[in-house]
Image (cartoon, rainbow, N blue to C red; front, side, top):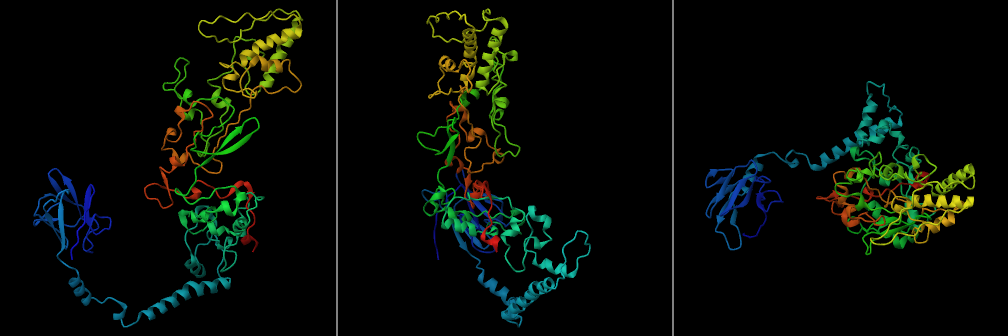
Length: 573
């Protein structure tokens, strides 16, 4: 019987392994015995394993091949044929030493098989069954029921026979977290020959988080969730694998069709990972003043926008070479984004920790009530009141006709060739007017859009624009319940709160592999990557060339924000 086939690849391997391009199925051949490679002017063969490679009667490790050469690999003879059109080479493989006759002679002289011992398989099977049943079942039950198996004690030096019998029921090594009570089986196995109840787990893990909020009506899905027992997802005696079962089917059993079965959950259906998983949804700031957020799908056109209430450009801060004129070095992501002690996420960004070192609120040419004219950050209403009170105090001290106090002129920006603005009107002669004029002059600089508050912040007007004179006209003199001038800021530290992402496990990557920060010009641009970026590295739970990932790789089942895990049906039994 003959058959022909074509094989292609950088190397054509020969051997018994099924991954070879030319499989040689005989048991006497190694898994990988030789390989054919292309060389200039033809093909060559090289030995891979320890089996001999014989070419034209000579044992070699490597040789160039020509039409008519004969190769012996175990019981196979391989002949090199003339090169056909469109190919680099051709070989003919023939089994010249069949195994059948040799195997028959070997088995004839051997005493193999139960049928040659004089006893049938059934006798051995029943005998083995009875021995195992007595030693591993009846004897442990006898010692346990008779109270002969004592509790483990660290002072015990010699194991009694009853304790040694109990070792025959050792189902495997406990996880590291539960190893301290490994010798006291009754901690979990509270009843003999019965499943572990939930109350055995909840006696220690009483504060573990629930999976959903208690007040969400999920109907039949909620009943299924309530009927789940701890051991449905947690299995001990698995050693270093831990007690958490990570198979995706445990989650997909409910999440595959929740849109129809439990619309109150407001979650999308999941068919698996990576195929069947919908696009990520990020939680963005919709209105910083009201503290409102919105969940938006990533990867849309136009892209989603965040509204944290602050002006910021990543591109302006990540300039190559830094700012040598100002004496600042080139910045990196880690200068502002400081990792938590766990390394999983990042600490909140604050003015004191991240911004003040470069953006000091110092106005050295303006008369202000603070030392070195350094304005405190974060209290716009207090700043206005403090400046007013400062000048009011001067007026009281020096009288209503106090001489004008030198103050820096407000910052003025003019286009090339444009005339200067007309001189300011002379200060008023009344005391309150004088205090208001001096306060307005100083606060124009404090709230300036080049070095003051307006450089980074929006105002509380409808469009967030800064009309300093109009804003301060309503704020001066200070009222009993003064309005805010600077719009509130709301910066999120986690844009995917329903998922977990461990930055520490991704330290081998650079920030720019996932976040396009160097091209981001405004703080409203969302730099969280979509699902397309993650599937480049993360495959399913059985992936071979990518990181094996399952549902709990990114999602937690127990959510502490949903309250404590309720007593399930299994715990009530």
